[in-house]
Length: 170
Length: 170
Image (cartoon, rainbow over all chains, first blue to last red; front, side):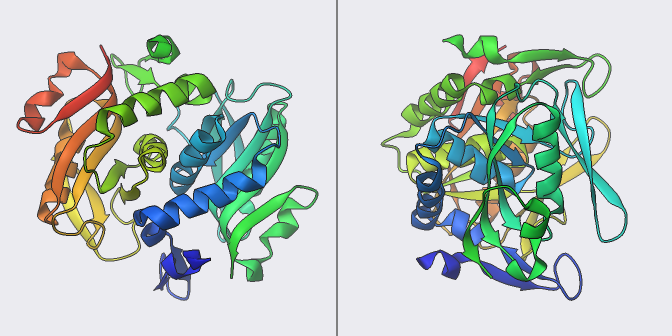
């Protein structure tokens, strides 16, 4: 698969010592973008996914395209204060301090099978916050899918018991 | 078209006196989401669009899905400091003060036909900043497409000379 060649390493972003995996060359390339979305879709076609949950901002691009391809709806998880209606919140740990994600309270209906999609699985902090949000609202996590997994950060540990899938591993 | 019934009015968001058009019920509904993306795609199929430009965050959902449907790549415009590589910046006016959007310098190649996509055309400020970015990089604006147009804000005035299209008008 040529997708790996479309991921660009950016040293020292967002801060010194971090090598950021930049997915914009992959999104920019029509063949790579299509291949990535199709590969994710193949993994879940036939599964009964009711809706895709994507977190801002890069999760919106992949989640939106995948929702279209799978023929399901899309629900956003956003940073605090961005969503206009009544929200449910989940906190997660950062290296220093806490952050949180919000979803509309009516985004998930009890029993909905929700596929959580994001660009990168790193420490698993935001992914497990999304799992919490889905379960708080009575939804069922159908899977957690990533374009990229940074295996050395052991993010899967935080997602034990869930079906975790990634297209590209480092 | 039943899409209009899937847009929710939120009074006094983000501040008093503004009625916010919430598109999350439309994105959430698999039929409405598909209908909206297909309707946008029909408008541009056959046109030679090379790439779709979407601005964070809601423009990523619609732009990502539309790029997939049209079989083209996607490039993001983001708030300052979010993109990891070398960027080009365009400023735009807010009600009080200025804001700006950034794109990677290599996002657009000279001569690329770029379709700019966003959820809402309001005053046209961010849309014209995106037009500026595309043209700074030597791209050609193939069109500017919106899910919703707030016609009473006259955003089209700022986009004169460009092919502007919206699915739902208020």
